[in-house]
Length: 257
Image (cartoon, rainbow, N blue to C red; front, top):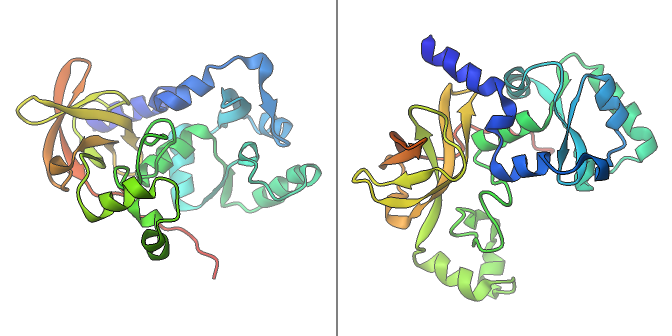
């Protein structure tokens, strides 16, 4: 119970659980932020607005980060993605649509904090933290994104580097980690059990569903097998970690048929 209470305390501080790329976005200047068509809607529903990638977006609502996360897992939540230019609804109709969706008692609003912990439980990458322009799909454990035709045709950017990696080995690979002790954050060192630095954590937070600390990071290929014991360093203290398969929590995506 004491451990669970401590984990809930960490989770309650949602901004601390956000990865560095996200926290950098949250701290940008407020006076140049753009607003989505749902900005006033978020405020009316108790949204706590923060800066994110040049936009003013809700980090959470009246519910706590943990409650919002768990509700999304068990039922359904609505997240504003219009800042990603993914909205296919006219701005004038966005509020009407969101209001209609919330009439379903299972639907609640979710903010950036819940989105981040949910994507980490799902083993999904955050660009700028877990992958960037220097990461290949093979290194990032994203080889599934390359279909057979493209592999054969080699007609995509970086094919001359990536295709040989698919057929051979890479020096490093993104892995999931189940960690003991204090929550693990981006940039925490990953070490072998002998104490040799192998790599670094790229994302990490307490998992509301598992009640355990989960993380992702890069290690040499020979240390990437699930079940491999490693160490992570948090506040100059070493604690045990185990390479884990991802997703950490089984997915239950709805697929339109």
